Length: 615
Image (cartoon, rainbow, N blue to C red; front, top):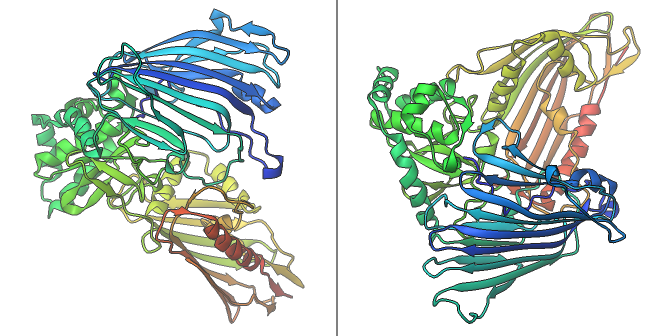
């Protein structure tokens, strides 16, 4: 699902990422005023007034252009005023030909969405970039309803932010003001009975640098949210009323469903076959007209054209399932960094829909074409969902080390010239398998030498090799990644010498993980997963080499994290077993999780640096 972007949205690009002591936001929001008048049918007029002061040279480049997003079939957007005020007070208006309209946002989406771009002249550090615009929504997405929200970014300065709102009698609005001042205002002379007036303000003079892995603003940031829906059930009903008719079963859909499920052993087998077919045969293309960001196309047209967005995928799969007696429903979800639902029923953070089969308690995302049934891409995991047909709130399964894992077996042989020959076989489960299938699919039909070189360069290795897999799109086939490789000389033979254990063309999950360093200070919640990575390695030495010392065994446990490594020589073969596991039981973490990881990372890096000494 595409989030309907209103011209109301003020989206300033992210700030400089640097040490907290050196952090200076690229710009300061000096004034930000949104004034709404909402009519009882859900239509509204909004006046947008902003003034942004550029603080750094980076800000000149980042904020010298301002973009307003709107839907040309649902909204009318007019730029009333735009100018640069230079540090000495000189005003330079934006010429009319420097206010341009573009289609969409540059992504592979075909819609009525437009972008109005304001190109400010003579921008320098200290310049004030001023804008006043009017947006009129002439067709509500959900007739009779209005929702809007603003989340205040902790990486920005807000000297003054104001939200003014009036609404006609006949539309009832709920408000959620979190760390935002204000509320209802007294009626003014001439106001109709039942008319509402509100004013909210916000000020934030402390800004913080960005943090790796931070969750979405909607999970934690100060905000103001408005909704005319009584609850999430009402929101779901409004969506379901418009989407359900699109899932009608036509003769062509019924015929296909019966053919695909012929001989199916049970309901789960039927679901698997239909899900696999939609996943493989309906390519993802987003074509939105009018409110198409929220309303799917008819299942029959999706089948005929063999493409559609997430809503279209869900609608066609729902029709196919219904044709063989299996009930399913749309599950509205955030596929990004949001792990909680706002208090009020608003469109944010919903940006995606997937399929839910109640009888199997099963979530399916057929737009994730590399996800076998029962697996979800990482962005869909442990997320609240709103079920369209019932209005109930559910939650997708979280990551877990039993299901989300890699197990890699690596056989290495040290040659007399210092080269390493090797093979690896990797099995993956859960979202890690989904990622692996997608990666291997992207490598197809490329010069494999380039792919091999890129993979070996991850860990400063070089050489040659070959990778083989089954078809990444065959979701029923067991998934393994096989590789054979030969590494250029890594050690002097004969010795005396020493070497660390190479990775070759294996996934190298442990070595990759060891690169990640937590921020020194963690102020905001971060995303985290539960998973397991195991590496079973053998390294055979030539008869002319005498091994003198191997690494010590390692055992570490702290909080939800554990790591073990064992080393044993049997004749001329060194056997190594390494396993990292994290069992959190949650997907949103904090500074304590950073501290746990920092302690493990030191142990992990030390072990991965351990050498085998020989002569």
